[in-house]
Length: 136
Image (cartoon, rainbow, N blue to C red; front, side, top):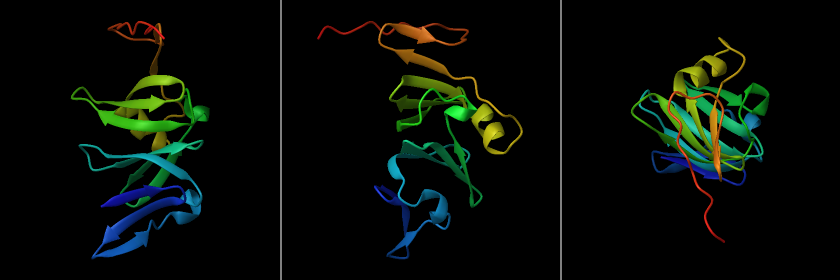
């Protein structure tokens, strides 16, 4: 079982709490969301540090430098069409899991997310949805 805290990532293994082996990268990082995808990768939403991916004991961090609209990721979900949906401070973000994997593995430099904020979508999409503003 994975546990995200205000000071990084831990795992309960054999009844003991073990700090993630990549602790130097995650030390003092506020973990806000954890999600294990269909391929077995652990996605880590962080406050102020973007999105982490831990796969095969390798940790990579994806940030606005790579195309994410925010470095604050608070929710992570996966759909059946190969996308991760992220709840960020910039809105709801849909991004291809293949693009995220390629970016994390250094095969591409940027992801092309679709971002929804109150009032509409921003980005390229084949299907457009509308999120109307809610009355205050």
